[in-house]
Amino acid sequence: MSTGLSIRAKHVRPSSTLAITDKAKRMKADGLDVVSFGAGEPDFPTPANICEAGKKAIDDGFTKYTAASGTVELKKAVCDKFKRFNGLDYEPKQIVISNGGKHSLTNIFTAIINPGEEVVIPAPFWLSYPEMVRLAGGVPVIVKCDRENNYKITPEQLKNACNDRTKAFVLNNPNNPTGMVYTKAELSELAKIIVEEDIYCVSDEMYENIVYGDERPVSIASFNKEIYDRTITCSGLAKAYSMTGWRIGYTGSAPEIAKAMGAIQSHQTSNPNSIAQKAALEALNGPQDAVETMRQEFEKRNEYMYERISKMPHISMVKPMGAFYAFVDVSDTFELDYRGLRVHNVFEFARILLDDYYCAVVPCTDFGFDTHIRLSYATSMENIKKGLDRIEEFLKGLDDVDYV
Ligand code: PLP
Image 1: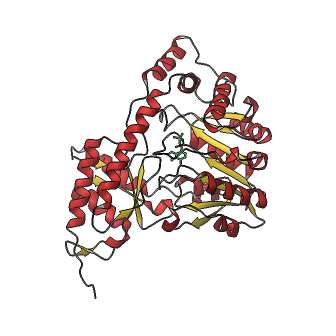
Image 2: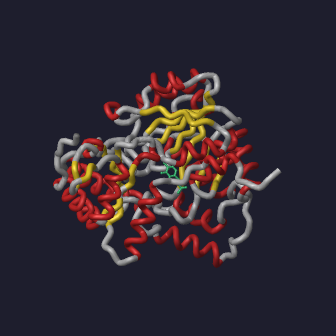
């Protein structure tokens, strides 16, 4: 035997988007006026009542181990939320509380995937899914979705991607990075395929509270018993309650899956932070007005972003229906000339914007779309205006040159 990294570790790809966001941070630290559309985290403080509940937990000495899969009181609060918000009936034994949504998702994949089993992931996707599947020994099967269908997977695409090695399908609704939301009718068609193929549905509903207009988020598990039994519904507190740093996520699933995930978690991390669990309890059971205030603010920003970007030359986007991202097609710039050089690709697009216009955007190559960038509007209106002005200036300066 000799030393060396495991095959799993060797295959994990570091996020290429981090290169841009790290560079933006360094530039900011050097005193440069950088506007960042990078962060996927609400720019609001965690609501005061939630912070108070955390402080009280410390004062009350609630600072020891809890049950590994979370406290019963928090599981009950999650059941109430599932009932109230999603129309889903879960009992506490079906709930696992974890250290954030990411942890919930890794628990799910570890619990359901055998080596070599396939997981269908529609692209564009949140960049962690394929890596999580690989880490669990599975094989991600990427299905590229069309802009004409608002970047959503069709039932035919899902069916065609399934075979006898398929174990699960990942549904992210509302979607990061596209901001798209599946309608009830679309979900119902997908549910039929999932049941027909007898696979699991991993339904990541992390952005369920951030939905715009008349759209209402629908949980795929809510249609009937067949799909309910096959779905692991995953959500968390990070986005809706601006609690990214507290690290609480949760799942609702069939009891045997919850039991397996609880056992896995009991060895890997034990309980999620006890103080954060008390804060999460207050978040779910306490007043919900802060959630709505943040949602409204995101909606205003969404309108503004969409209106401005739609009028800019060379780029375009579909109007988001939820989450807080603009998914922008910049492929028309790849043939254009910037100060004597071709823009070439999405990394070059992002690099020029950052180096010359002090504006950080995320190239979506790691999200399965190398023609698009993601702009997070979880930043102030003032920053949004400034950043969009810079993008516009850059785009207006691009020339159409015939390359030979
Ligand atoms: N799912 C999606 C689609 C996300 O965008 C994120 C975070 O960005 C997560 C899950 C994980 O959230 P958490 O911060 O709770 O780990």
